Length: 381
Ligand SMILES: Cc1cc2nc3c(=O)[nH]c(=O)nc-3n(C[C@H](O)[C@H](O)[C@H](O)COP(=O)(O)OP(=O)(O)OC[C@H]3O[C@@H](n4cnc5c(N)ncnc54)[C@H](O)[C@@H]3O)c2cc1C
Image 1 (cartoon, helix red, strand yellow):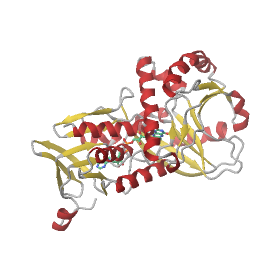
Image 2 (cartoon, helix red, strand yellow):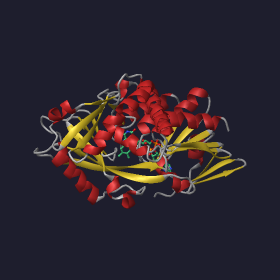
Image 3 (cartoon, protein in one colour):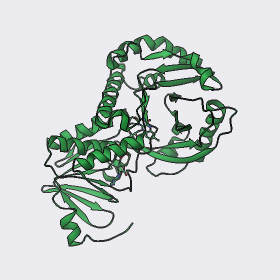
Image 4 (cartoon, helix red, strand yellow):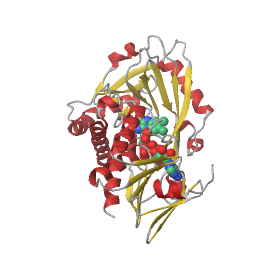
């Protein structure tokens, strides 16, 4: 890391008189900064981001505008009450509507394509359970979404998609997909227009609250003093605040080269949401498989996991696009922030610091609400 002192000019021109610093320029940091400016237009708001671009999950995810497949929600109900699970669904649904309002569907290629869940021929038992629970789910989630029948069995589509070994499909009708790159580009533009100052390449190494404000130590060697700070670094939170209950979780993602005559269209979940895939620009994006090697993937370091990568390629070639010549164009990884339950942490951390982290793999859905709640808590300090 480049080490240097700030010049007098830099200090007096660029890093002067911040009222608030937001750490992290992901979806949460950006929506928080926008909300702060909306509520108090004269507030001097800066976002400090370590990456050249946001370098966590917001520009590296799968772009599912989703609130939960049936097996994922049933799995959650083994750890949380049904009421708690449905209230999280409600928050995700409301968050998605807020995001659409904020960004605009046309600025993030929002497509209301529905979300499919696939069941392979060895998953008959869990499919039966889903079908039995479907009326209850539809009653509660129908009220939340305003859709009369969110989940339906959609086996008639299996042949159209060209899958192999897929015995059943459940379609969750109100879900959709977005282009995360365009979503983030639009939010950056809105933040710029609102007068938020964004600094990339500023890696905060430590954060110290005292009676006169917050001291931020940068990796470059210089120190910033700011009256109030909102921490929106999600999966990296423990690097700054080791006592926060946020576990980093890496996800492997691949994108294929364009596939002539691609039949897969829409968003697809598999195996309690551990795998996800979709079409994009005539290609398949496929990710997940963290449960195959939890211990290695419990990390905030980007990087490959060959065991998981070969399982993803196998899934692609045998089930999703069988019998077709498929080539992987690129791989990448992103970092999630998880906890013992799927609930974000939005709270006052100390006298001048608020945290808004732990998005639990559903940040597109809840990120805007988490950011806005974090902003309101900060203004209440
Ligand atoms: C592979 C993958 C697929 C996903 N798919 C979906 C999906 O389809 N649908 C969905 O709803 N959600 C999905 N998610 C989750 C979603 O992307 C995240 O929940 C959401 O983007 C989190 O936003 P955030 O702003 O809290 O965190 P991030 O986007 O991670 O932003 C945190 C920022 O903080 C910066 N930062 C960290 N430490 C420091 C520091 N010390 N100093 C300065 N800056 C720092 C990071 O560089 C980063 O830019 C996926 C995530 C991954 C990884």
